[in-house]
Length: 567
Image 1 (spheres, one colour):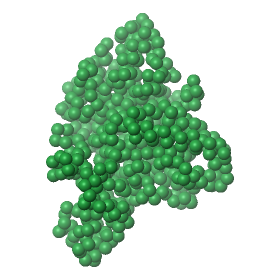
Image 2 (image 1 turned 120 degrees about the horizontal axis):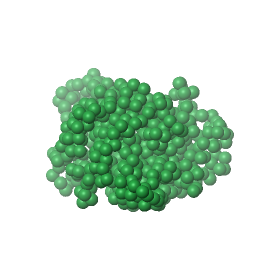
Image 3 (image 1 turned 30 degrees about the vertical axis):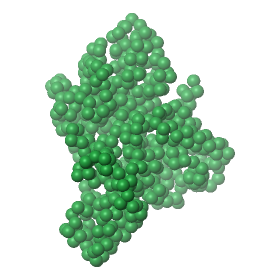
Image 4 (image 1 turned 90 degrees about the vertical axis):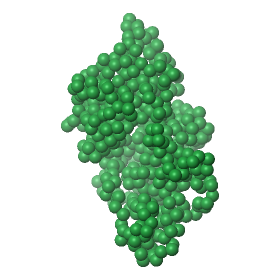
């Protein structure tokens, strides 16, 4: 079924009007198609090897380290710079000017001259300059709560407290991982034709994967420097529980609005994967057992998931109850008989919260690697090919598209202050996206075109005064201000999951829904909103480390293992 699975679908893909609502996008979970998992599967399959040719770090954590990932055709090296950062200078804000560690992913193996050049630029981040030999640039800060505890414990010859590890989850958290030409780094086009980077965000995920190895090596090195006679390494049972944390704010939110074709390809791959599984006539015994085990592991993960944000706390209460209800339903024979997965999803729609439904979607894909994993190759996008506006289209045809795709927006009262409450703009200081209050701040002249619903409704009103036989080209000659929304509408008619079906400038907008959608596709877990505008996450928690990839399953780490959970 793998090569022509779409021809065998008996269940249609879910309606974009259902999937593309912010409340649902903001309830997505990592799955087999998440970019971290895609990366590790490829590196395992292609027998990548890893080296640490440089580790010149002093007793304070200051110095340089290099971690190299060697693939079939190319080598990539994470060049790491450790700094002695006073605690009062440690900040998750993008406007920070100093960090505990800074990194760049170098294309190849750096020479001493390369490292010297990078030494004078990478620690400065925005204030420095890098070249097209660098693919990404990033920075990270230590966890105030956990980092020193782990170093102290290891130096004293004991393992760090497991409860403290579980409460935090990471030794360092990145505050930015920049690629795609930022600050002079290589443009996406320069690496997109490389098989290892064809899927989205593979270079950035590789950078984070190697950063995780650096953080463990760093705490063990500092423990040995502090007490060489007594220091021990982190036990294998604890090591994989350390992730890389990430603090992500509004800078990430507009991405999925600004990249409609890419968003479509992400969602469409996930929706086709779901439809493939739902179309199966039976659930083989071994597949049902795998699903049951993954469900039990997901329950453990949900119990470990902590948040202090009231909205997320409520979602966690619902998720835990949903998973318990789902486990009982499975135990009562839900996977027996014909079309079990389709029936199971239908049951979930009637009995589970949106959070629980989307967790089930991810879990249903887990047993079916042979049915799902090939879809990862479809998740990239050549966005240039969709950029051209079809000027020959009639206004009648354009009106029909607007009515079909933006019908929800045409029902909104756009004279209401609540409908127009927010403004997306770009900060002068850091050139980063920001969200302000339209009627409280003088920012409307700087508004970015990130309100497709409002703009579609405005366009629909404008073309009502025109003869429907006139062309889009004629209309845009008179009204060029509508070019962007005409383009989006034409894209959305070819790419059904390209457009979010909600008001992105409403007073009720929760930007964290946008953040979570993107981060779930990355493979992030344990979303912990700190407000409605920024969130902390874990990346690569439970994953193998580079030296372990050749030893076992590279993809059986997305949930804590049952034996470990029961210890």
